[in-house]
Length: 400
Image (tube, rainbow, N blue to C red):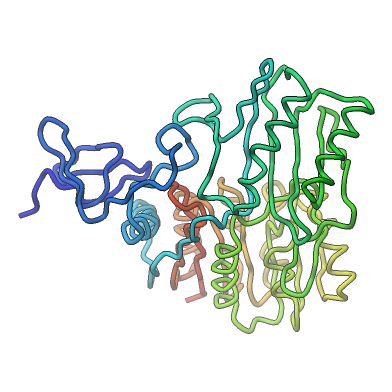
């Protein structure tokens, strides 16, 4: 009989759950919770590596050991599919990105007087957790925290928080400052001096009238295989190189040797350009700047990629269009792809590779695909956002 005081699993938001159903924040599987709430650590308890853990909202699970963390990522997928009565042939072990490898971070900064708060939002709050370190991020991202504080402090008080995007491109760091109100020649020169001193690949400022690139000594690129894309400022990238590689490998396995592939919600070409050699690719994306960047990169590489600026929520591909392809790759936002999935369910496409950042909407869409005659052969869970409750996955579907 299971001890009712033992934490047996982690709930979707990271709380430990005892065998008798109590939710206890800050616990790990194997911990014992006494009647008075005292917690005795179990074998899956880990020492949080960051001094900001608990106050910063960026991580929820630094107190959980690696094996239990991997189980949590996989269990999130298992639970979502079970909630929709969806059977999967195989749900594989989760692949987790290592600490210190996240190449993209969206932060906030609040400048009041001479003080600058900079970091992620505090746990359960819209306040900013002032960070001095972050073991999640690539060291070169975290190394910019202190210089950014000094830079923003010199720009004086800001009416609203400044949204900051840091991400690693091929040539170095991209910095996007959204909401910085200080303008004029002196401010622009100070920003350029900062970019030069810290060898940024690109510096972009949005003062409310659209992004303006102030520094880009050479075209800033991101490579997908042998093809380099010049992404628009702040373009979406997978959070870690390891996570991208895991999803890329899963997509490649799912589409197999398909010679004609549709990449839907293609972004700047994360999958389309990697799959392009030796194949014919159709790529559709609603963001005009993203699909334009993909097209330019494909054309320069003389890749057989046809692009279309298309809103797949309002105008999904219909079966007559879909049936031309031997495989389809889907990578929708968190809301899933209900409208496009409805059309796919009525198509004859032999193979589908569905990349998702939301197990719940993936399970909902999987149920519709299965009702339309597909089989969910396997799922690869991926934990790019280490120590968080955010889970990604790639599901392989085939026609029965």
